[in-house]
Length: 278
Image (cartoon, rainbow, N blue to C red; front, top):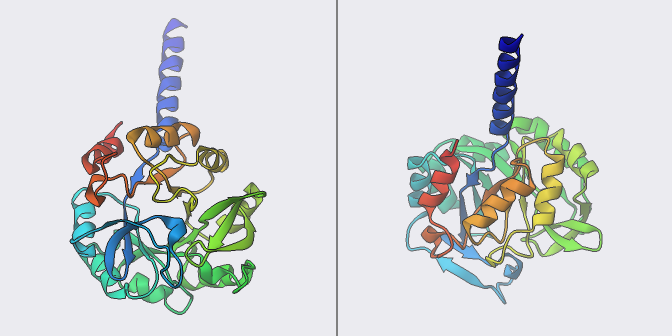
């Protein structure tokens, strides 16, 4: 009997360990492209005419250099985002440097999604095309795109701003509020047609002032498909808090605070080590 109890205890600990290993927040890298260069931008300042734009960092290295760096560290699940026009060449260069190693977003529609996958994107990321010009969510478009390229190749970007409703999805470089609020019902409905969610907290994006932990916690409590959060991460403590508040179910991107983007809050090596922890 005692032996059986010891065995049961051991199996229980193994089961707990396996359960915990399923939910560990991971660092996901990014390449933000603006006018063909790798940059870090304060998200809320990006507009159509460029007025008021605040840039935290502009790299003299190419997009391909960053893709190779991530490939060398086996940092999977990262994303390349085209912030406006003039970025296709740089996006293609990054995808060529690591075929099927990164996701591609920015200007994605049903007309070009398949071509980006053929160019080497593991997934395409879509936001604005899923809405009418005035911000009405078009469910049929989501279904069409999912059918066209396959659910397992599609990531829906639910980047948002805080509103009286909680968090409201923003499109057109986070300038236009839509009629879609981030709720458990919304996540349930859209998750049927995509592989992952990418969620920028646009109000804190690029500010290095801390993550939106309430949003992270809400996402973690839902936690049904992979999700990557971006916005505000300043130190490794923000990564740790994301792990804790999301129960390890939300991954995180670090931008302006990262040493490879001119930041002083975290180093890439530190985050590689974080990903490798047991």
